[in-house]
Image (cartoon, rainbow, N blue to C red; front, side, top):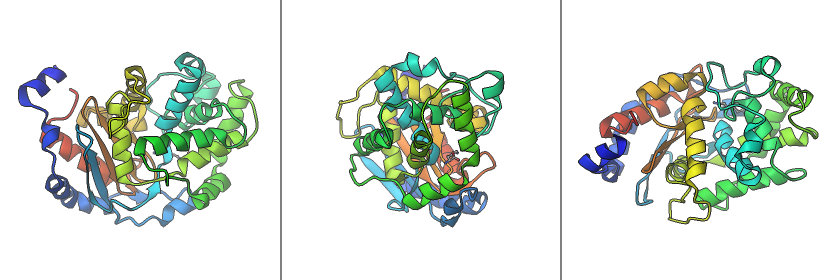
Length: 317
Ligand code: DON
């Protein structure tokens, strides 16, 4: 039905213009003050709540961006889709998912109680699953982090992408709950090694990106892992199905169900204020606005996405 709708109406995403995006952005600017900038990691609390950006990569790979398009922010949990790809590329899906589930969730991103009851993480989008995923990538020291960074650089075609040392240090100093999760994973025999494995998770969360980078990541997973410029080095429909399905069921944590009802597209949020959306087979969307709702999802980002989705009838359903 999805394909039929596109064929009947033509792909409306070809019609996206800068004006369309800037109208939506201006309409939703007011939401910048409706949430709270994350400050549980002290460095994150320093973000300017008024910053806002909206980017799209169109079906032909063209990038359209409005707002604070050059403003950098940390990728945070959006890095979980990249680390999952790197780990599955290297180890195969079975080896990773023998150690964690494909479950959806009604729990916040840092929930870990099920490590006691079920013995393994619910899914790779929750912190427990993501910390484990990164710890399963081969290599001593920060080699796994370098692999994740290389993948972000490849997808965005931007070799300057790197992580923020100050956000990393702030995450590391205050990440007691994540440290606890790492030791529970160890206790359950799911991971071996020392805390440098956890440091790679803190570092991957501290990778700095722009809304344009996020739109390119969204495009990549929407289009069988083909890059926005057409490069097919990692082309794989299986990989994009895996990543998008996890985004759909758990990318917005406990809001994922409600979000699937309204937006209806695979999406991933981060507490840095970013959201990535993949419109399968079509476009990538990246938004940035650091004020978050209580579940840790960007308020203005959500509303910009919802408006574009409604205007162009982009929901899968
Ligand atoms: O693990 C943490 O606390 C963060 N560095 C990442 C969490 C995050 O982005 C959750 N998302 N909305």
